Image 1: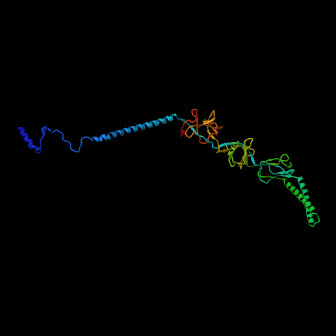
Image 2: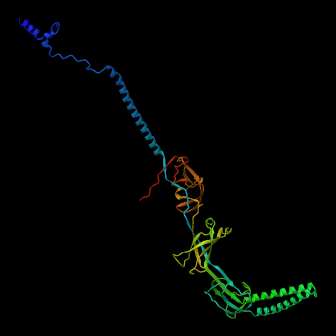
Image 3: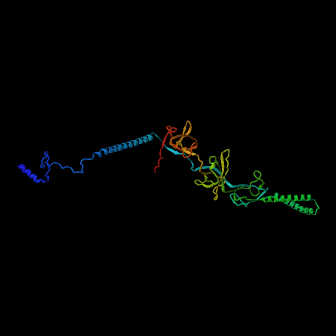
Length: 413
């Protein structure tokens, strides 16, 4: 009865279930309160099976390809580094220097003797005796100045005779000129007297000029360096051993210095080249000069070329006949190539140097050695300018060996 009542109560409390036949296996409604609710539509509780199946393998393949690519790149990089290290370890490193021409100006010092710009010994042109002298040694004279007077009695006598002969010949010629005009004498006789007159005139004029040499005149301005006569000295006309020297006169401003340049320096010396004159009497001082003339040819015996250097001497500090040195500063554009001495080896093939080609390979070059300057050598043939030459070469440097050039060290400071 209770059950029926309960059923009746249940029926009354759930009127919305009227007409629904409960399942005979279903538990009572009050016993299903812990059963989960049915899921709502449009909200699936599990991911789609098709999406995972497609994108999963693609992601795995991508990650695997990326890992393989990174590994291959690292391996290639490591192998490149290994090759570079092996190449660097097996290559020889060398220090090189560029072969250059020695164009630095060089000093050339040559000995020479000072000579006056003008210098001469004065001789008489007529025989006689010294009447007087006007200048002595050390005197400065001007051109045309009277130096001495000579008595010439013989010349005076000859001049008087010549004058008389000239006057007679002149009168005779004048008379014969009038007679031939009147046709009194022949033309031949007239011509003979005319020529006799001309001869007498020439002889008279010659003796007049000779008498003019009684006065000794300075031929140029200068200094009297010698006086060889005194009053009453008998002098003889002539030169050298035949004549009597009267005076010696020099012009020492400027002075000339003659030097002889060696063959190797001759092409670098030209007119106008500056020079310095060094004299031991003036230590620490030099006198400026310049080349005024060159011989233009070499002496076949000494293989030298004569040069003339002029030195201004306004103050008269230098004297003709002094010994000194002439210093030139020469810059030779055709100077030979010079390399350090530690690049040279004397091998069985002769003197050679190790050069580096454009592709950094060793090439042994035969050379022709000139002068040895101690720390450097002069190369006359075999090298061109700017050629890279190995310093301190060893026997390990074979022909064609690949080398690496060491960078030049920077000087400290």
